[in-house]
Image (cartoon, rainbow, N blue to C red; front, side, top):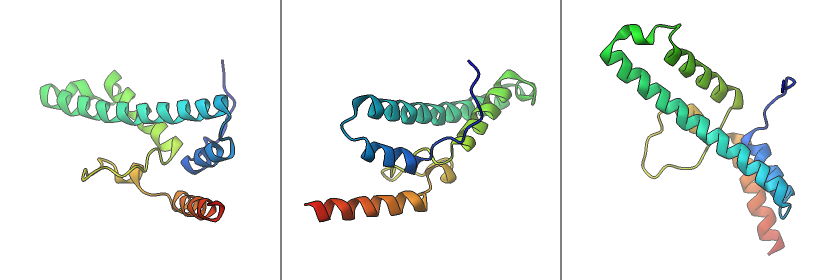
Length: 123
């Protein structure tokens, strides 16, 4: 199946859809699946980076630009960049490997503040 060009939904958009479609099981399940796969991509990118570091120690020729491991690493990095912010969950004292991936998106911060205000007004 060939997909048309499209702009991936942002983390803030996924959160909005989650709130807007509360109780709609299929929609929420789809949002969970999208976020789950994004987190898997992020984890695989970290594992590919670690594999490249190990390969570099063993034999630098293993990490030539045309090598399969480098192609995988580059492709995973491109996909993570295409998606944008993947996860802004605070890590308990851990320093993220790539701060940009975990940086708080100003739109997400505003969305969370607005959502808190709406909840407080209802309650």
